[in-house]
Length: 290
Ligand SMILES: Cc1cc2nc3c(=O)[nH]c(=O)nc-3n(C[C@H](O)[C@H](O)[C@H](O)COP(=O)(O)OP(=O)(O)OC[C@H]3O[C@@H](n4cnc5c(N)ncnc54)[C@H](O)[C@@H]3O)c2cc1C
Image (cartoon, rainbow, N blue to C red):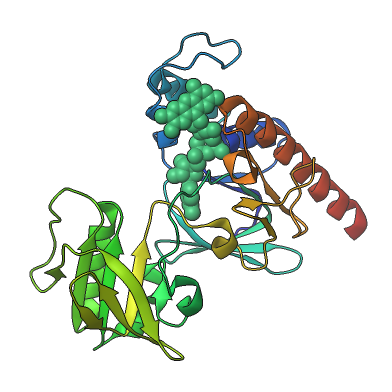
């Protein structure tokens, strides 16, 4: 497996800025996120406080960020990272297509996750709760599972699960009508809690109790503490030093996930610091190995 110097997760101002600086410092980079740049950039009507770009629309700023990556020859891998494992000297990243990528260091720039965990989610994570159908569908052969989809990409994953599982329920958390394989049962019901003993045994919704073997929660983003086991948090934010170091050596965090104020320029500035800290970390490791 080809190991990159720095894996960067997120294509908001923090991740893009980190990728640009890492490229300037000639490190090999893999950048995960949306090719169209973060929705929080795209959706802003008018931005008045980004230095050098007065009165720029979010759409235009997203375009400028994408263009800057292109100029620096940094591609975007349009894939959701579902897990980051710290292996000691390096990291393994799992993506929603079930692929693994090794990296010597990682920069988390995933923005702020607003969604509260569903009751039972933390308790049953890895014991019936999963964030990745491609990674875990095989455990549901001849079983019953539910997919709680927060966006339309989740429909594709539910279709794949239906090829493996005996019965699949799909609970859309958005307004559009899902288009799914016929054997999938669509439930327009609010999920309330998951229950069980050692493993998940079911899901309570506002109208019924569904006996289940598994629940897939397919959100836009995964909370950092769940994405990286062992990551130290400070409330809802990742705990970082002024150099954007986390408690895990070689793992850095920047942007909204590190705290308030939630601002583009703060995120971009922290992305720059995180990349320079990652470069120092890699250079120090290299010197120690020589
Ligand atoms: C409508 C609106 C208007 C705003 N206006 C202003 C303004 O005028 N001025 C200002 O300074 N700030 C403004 N903000 C705040 C600003 O949007 C944020 O502070 C900024 O976007 C944070 O950047 P970030 O890079 O930390 O995270 P984000 O921009 O949130 O980017 C995070 C990226 O990571 C991706 N991601 C998350 N998890 C994963 C994963 N597991 N795998 C792969 N990718 C993942 C997300 O899809 C997203 O692309 C505004 C926010 C909103 C919502």
